[in-house]
Length: 113
Length: 112
Image (cartoon, rainbow over all chains, first blue to last red; front, side):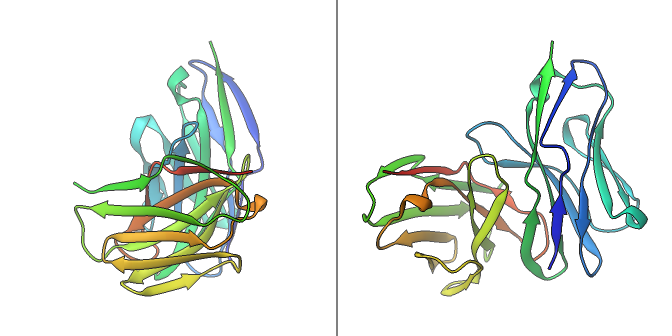
């Protein structure tokens, strides 16, 4: 069965600093990969997705992620973090014709002024 | 554009009471529908999904059940709530299996 590991439970960065959130997945076929963001008490919002093609994908709010098949990773990056980026971030893996999308435990991002 | 609604937004129920959470989607037809539970400080656990009216797949055996009486309506129910049922319940929809899912605002359930 597929699974997702987000090694960092909590990350703190200064506003304006760069950000990288790690995600490692396990999936027996071609993975579909996603990053979502969740503000406290809210639903999840899709930041970006990878199905195939270019391994560097651009998302909303200035985020990007790079798919590295050899490392089974899909890390999320942002060159300059804004205070409004403080939230919980979830990586997820699924696959074609697969309704069972698996989510990581999440990484909570704190942004220092 | 598509929107997804969940109600109620918050709910406090005693142990042993019944439960009914509702989710509706607007602006699309024949969506795949999903119920997730999110415990405090943890990721999302898929509870049920549905690919069509009356078609329900259960991922986790428990005292919860789901129904899909209409194309864009998904209901999560329980006959008798347990303390362990407390959590944040999220409904989501997708165009097809494996594609991105779009989430509702969630329902915070507290069982006392």
